[in-house]
Structures are given as structure tokens and as C-alpha cells.
Image 1: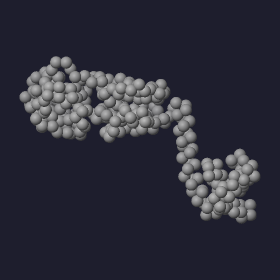
Image 2: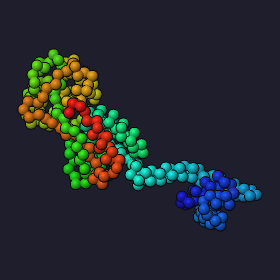
Image 3: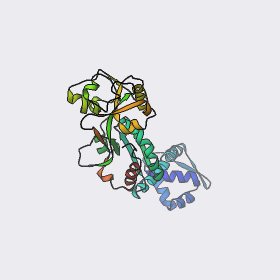
Image 4: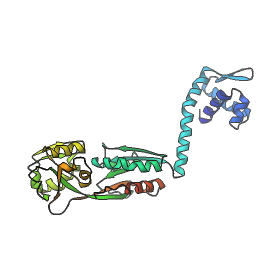
Length: 297
């Protein structure tokens, strides 16, 4: 059984005569009849019977018709999508966001891209549950938004923007009058972070662990506005991207401090496969994201 058989049974149902069905499929009546009789011989059951000049499908033919009605539309949709991909106008864009707060920037930025490229299938996974590197190489995803480079020769790293990390404290906090903070300052605080592994939190890997220190308490908070609201009410402190704090509704209720000494600056990358780098819609994605760089960076 193949697609040709499904097309024939669908045409027989639609036109109800052998001649009309053959003409619609650009086949001779004998060719159409031969193909279906070969299938009937293979499975050992008839698919249609004649009532005068009209054809009627047997129960087996009806079963085959139901399959055709499910499969043929999907084939046509896939054919159209493949044509769009061949023309450079269609494709799939599944993005993994490894930087949790960056999803709050990415989602609005994708709006302009989706309007310009309506035939691109877009999906965003904000809390990716496995490593993006093998997922990219295995075509499970098509891009990763991340502040960390992925060392692999088959990947392209598109720089989006760099940003400093800062410490957010409440207006009445003991550190609020100071211009900067140290790792020792954090050792005396309740530290609020996003709910990801410590190995992916810069406040631990870049500030506390090199100094051999731990915060007094550590609490995971999944929402930026809630986190900064807790900071404003004196329930903890948080090291977050400066641009994210600047656009928060709580900005007027918190003070931002730089890291003492050399500033802790991160770079946000969109990592894609090199083979996809030159796609027209991928270039469109880079351009759309570039137009939405946060004003605070």
C-alpha cells in the first residue's frame, strides 16, 4: 500500500465513477483499475463494487478512505511547508532559553520577527530540562539563548548584547548608601536567586565560591517582580542583570550596587548551527533581536 492507492480511493469516493477518478488523477482507467486490483490481490479483499455506472466503496474501501482522509491533507501541508523551506521563507525555530530572566526580554522581541516571517514555526522553552548543546546538534532545538559559550565547531555564536550584573537591595538596607558590594557582604544576607542549579548562577560561581563564602540563607524565587518585591520589603538581596532591574515595576523601591573592583559583565548569545546561519529568516531573526536590545545596556 502506498500514497498512490490512497489518492485513488479518495478520488473514487469523490467522483464515484472510474473514468472521472482516472481523469482527475491523470491516469488511464486501465492503469487505475490495475493498481487497485493489485492491492486487492495483495490484501485479499475488494475495495469497491459497481452499481450501474456508479462505484460504491465496500467496508474495506471505507476503511482505506478514512486513512486517506487523515493522511493526504497532512502530506499536502508538509509538501507546502517543504516548499516554503526550499524557498527560504519557511522553517522551524525552536529556541531553548537557558537564561531564565532573558525569556522576559525574548518573548516580546520575537513579536516583530513572527510578523515578518509568518511561515516560521516558532516555539520557546523557557526552562530547558537538558543540555542545549546535544539538543542543538541532534536537531531537537534550533537555537539557544544563553550567557555561556558552547565550544563546538559546528555552532555559530551571534552576540546580542552585554550587560553588568548588580546587587539589588531595599532602600532601607544597610548597603543602600554604598556604591558597591563584595562577596563578604553577601555572606551576611538572605540571597534570592532564580530556581536553577548553583553551577549556572554567577553569584555563586563568580563571586561567592572564589572567596570561599556562602550566603547566610539562600531562597529560590521563580519570578523577577516577586523577587524584587521581596528585596524592596527587606526579605533578601538579589544579584540580577542591571537591565532587568531597570525595567522592573519595583525599580523605584530598590537600590542597585556594582560589584567592587572589576565589574561582572555578561554577554548574551544566540547559538545556532552554522549550517543555518545564512538562512534568510535566521538573518531576519538576528536583525529583529538586535532592534530590541534593552535600553539600560
